[in-house]
Length: 188
Image (cartoon, rainbow, N blue to C red; front, top):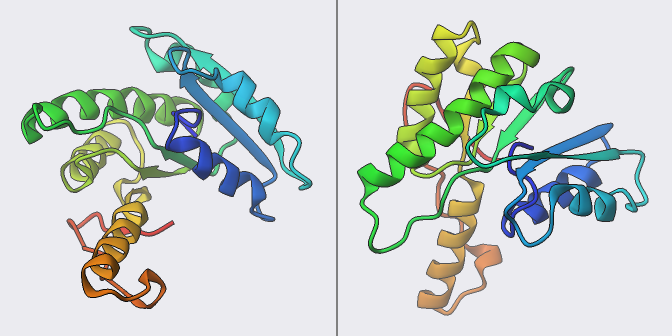
């Protein structure tokens, strides 16, 4: 998990740690969050599962490729729930420029330390970041079809909103997941 200790990423890290197929969960994060990644990893290490959990800290302004070797080596799946959230004052283009730059560092580190991993991008705007990352993958020797957009959170939110408007339970609403590009988005 590149960015697995932030407020919205912690539940995803928890779910990954609970999955019986996950043997080891490595999460890295900038040390600017309220709880450092080593602390989140320590909490998740207490899960009653076979999964071991390790946390790795990265520093703002430092290149991820210089800090993620131990975290990414031997990974088969890398989630990148990174970037900044969209604010009303931020244009879509500005958000893309910022978050694509953040994603770029993680993808370059994957190319160096876990070339065959599937890279799940949870970086907004996902429909623009995924094709950009696929092109970056090509130039770094990663199969571009191994970079995918994870949009399940958006679908879950849409189900909730539609349920609120219609007065129905979101459990019975099924907003279809969009297919953003030739590099298809998948739910996770």
